[in-house]
Length: 253
Image (tube, rainbow, N blue to C red; front, side, top):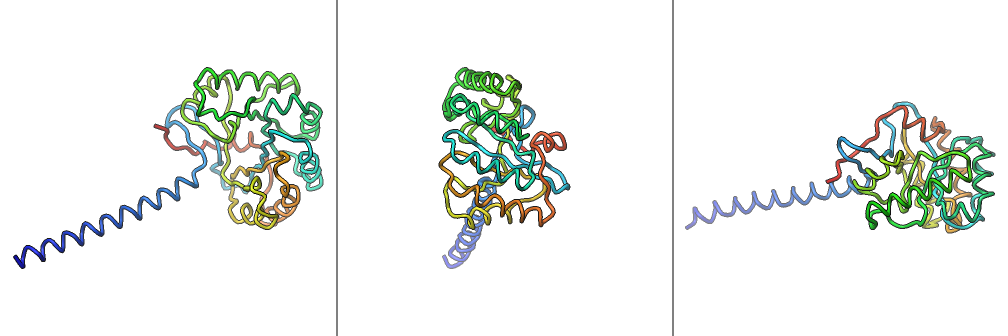
C-alpha cells in the first residue's frame, strides 16, 4: 500500500508538471497569436502585413471611413515631415461623400487602397456579398481617382480564407498591419507614441486612422515620425515593401 502511494504520488507530480507545461505553452501560443495580426492560406492567396527585410524601411497606413475634419491636419503633417508615400485605405461610401478629399489625398502623392464599400465585416458575409462589396468599392474609387485600386484592407481588418480567395479572384492584395497605434482609443498622445515607436522594426506596416473619431493622431504623428527617423527608419510605400519580400503567413483552416 505504501509502495502504491509513493508510485501514485510520482504520477500525480508528473501529471501536474505536464498540465502546468501545457498551460504555459498555451499561454505562449495565445500571446503569440494575439500578436499575429494577419493570416493566409499556406499555398494560396496571402495577406501582407510585414516585409521580411533587413532594410529599415516601414510604411504608414491610414484607414478612413467617416468625417472630414482629421484628414486635412494629417495630410499637412505628412507634408511638413516630407513623408510622401503613405497609403490611405478609404471606404468608398465615404469617398462618394467627400470626393474632393479623395482627390487631395491623391494630389499630395499618397496611395489609395480600398477599405470596402458598406463597412461591414466581410467574415459575416457570404462570398457573393463580399465580391459585390469589393467590386462596388473598386468602381467608385476608380471613377474618382482614375485608377483602379489594387490593395484592399477589409473593414475592421477582418478576413478569413474565403475573403482572401475572393479578393484574390478580383485582383486585390489584402494588406493588414504589424504595428497598431491604437489611436482609435484616443488614449493620449504619449500613449500612441509609446504604442508605436518601441514596437516598430524593419518592414513593418503601421496602422493609423484618419476618421473624425481619432482626435490625437495628428498630434502624435510628428513625434512618431521624428523618433522613428532618429532610429534610422525611412518611409516607403506598401507596394515597395510587398515587392521586396514574401508575405508572412499562417495557415487558415
